[in-house]
Picture 1 (cartoon, one colour):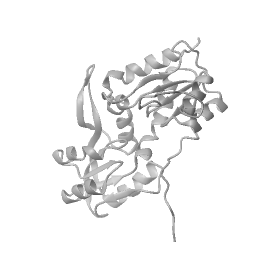
Picture 2 (cartoon, rainbow, N blue to C red; picture 1 turned 60 degrees about the horizontal axis):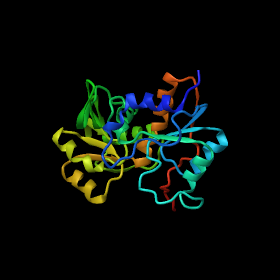
Picture 3 (tube, rainbow, N blue to C red; picture 1 turned 90 degrees about the vertical axis):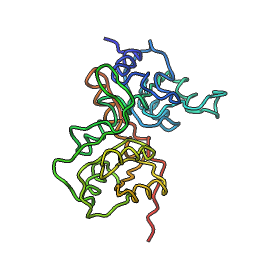
Picture 4 (cartoon, rainbow, N blue to C red; picture 1 turned 180 degrees about the vertical axis):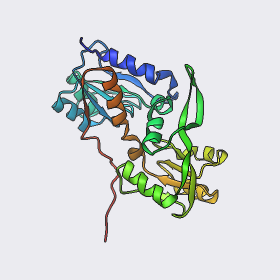
Length: 265
């Protein structure tokens, strides 16, 4: 049976409905034809020229990303301006994006991040509403079955998120009993940790002033990075697609972190 773009879109719309998205967001099918056949899917965090070229080279006719491929209003689509969009349209490659709707959805990205970092029996950090019979919202938190040293959690987090660069505040010997996580740039939601007696908050994009505020309130912080806490979405996409469709799913090799770290001695 031929799988169409619209079939894949409808499937994800049930998992993370578009109406869960923030008003400023731009989720959904952003480029392409719902009736086009899908033979190979490329999953990624961001869509740019390198990813568009990769889709062409690897024969993918549908890209599924977390961050919207089109976010700001476009005034023109010509060769040399929005070059990656030009490439996608020219090669009949569709693009579907699941962003804030996937962040808040039950069983979505935040639940997957919490699971990956070893949290179970989680609760929602920032509730935003209800979808069907399930609560939805940003972030997840849980009490550990056994307390751990902050220093040990730092090392575990780096390993599980496959990164050697973690910004943090707090003492290695601090005993952590309750942890909150939030994928992407969740620094602005740190205040919700204060109300839930959280000992450690793991997210990305912390400013100095925000991290200092957390330190003043005895909240340990791991700024694991926006990219690092969300690139795991590729694993989530692969898993969900394979549960429903008998189709080849490729993880992007070109979607790299644009933030680099200088190793200087």
